[in-house]
Image 1: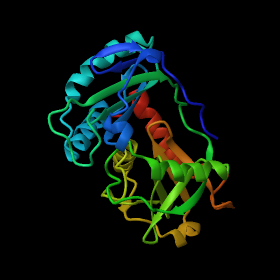
Image 2 (image 1 turned 30 degrees about the horizontal axis):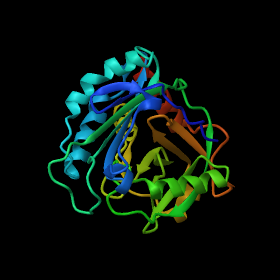
Image 3 (image 1 turned 45 degrees about the vertical axis):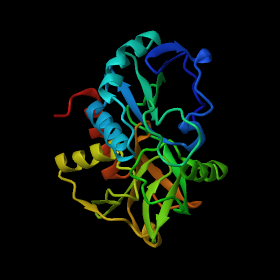
Length: 287
């Protein structure tokens, strides 16, 4: 169900590109002690990063929200050299970017005057033109905190939820908060009823995924009506279609929820329309 982890040969760490097996981070780094950091992931497809500015803007915003003074523009300038060192210049790949508050004696409050720890690495990843899989998912109560809009490295709640999915031989876990479906452990989630697309509104209870934003833009271009409202978990079985979105997931149809087949064996018409539009966007043919 899950892709095997990939280990890069080269990483960018605090201003230098080094061999991954010689890269070293202090045991007193707050990312290690507290999960005190922010990360971002971008996909390079056909030699360009999809929605690069949106990803970098989100990284900047999240860092500002938690008071880490990192220079994201400087990080961006180092990406070409990292890709070249990794043998990935112009090739399809994923890029991981992480900034932690830095190294300091352990205390809960923010230490003053320390440099952030900056890490980046890339690995080969070719995304399919269209993700034609049909996902099986489970649901779970959302027990996480109330700042899910921050893309923090402290992902234990998401990790626990995704492990629940894996144990049930599923791709994802859908979160339920106050009776509504909010998002999934590493994806956003959409439903379709009567040709209308429903998804939980952006806010503190979900990560406003970049692919989520792209899909909403595509709905506008395709004149597909969207309602930004969470679908009650008790009404999932009344929906016509459901799909997940994410940087590597792209647009992925859902077939089964909690071991119950609710949707067709093939993606529904609205899901297919959005998958085709997303493919056109990647190939640069959609204006």
